[in-house]
Length: 226
Image 1 (cartoon, rainbow, N blue to C red):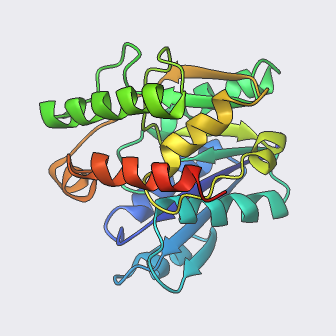
Image 2: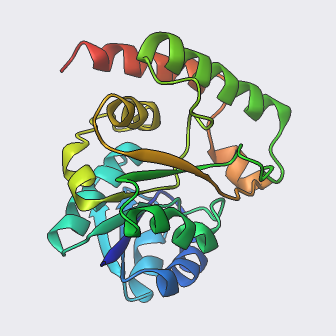
């Protein structure tokens, strides 16, 4: 199976090179999508010798993943892995994500930071944010409560699932949108434990508590715009 990693990146010149270096040995190809960065993210990624695409303006992580997924399919990906550029996700778990797909047991595998491997450096406020999103997902989006990580950005899917999952949320609401599409389809899905490490820099760039309201609004509007 040809495994392609898709890495959306926005103003990640300090971390994108190291992320690519760790991901590259574990996959057959890497597609980086520079989402309208104002720093040297694009040039740094290009120096790594991987496929690099660029949005002319910042559109959001969901849009970056959409562009990267489409590009990965065009270059013959059998399995696509979504992984963040900021180093929070541990690339050594890529084989764990891909294994159920290789064995023919799943079409989509989602990494969960809440299945036994305690996230390093996660503050209480971030845990409460995830809990609020999980409740919203269950009550409004119809996403099963048994799904443990409501905002997992580390996932793998086979090419059929990648083509079928037509997610349209450009920004952070894409996580919940994808979960809704996955769990309401006949695609086989599983969660596996993964390691996520937070730092001051990544927390500063990540979701804030107020973002839960923004995500909920984006999802609510999106449900009536299709």
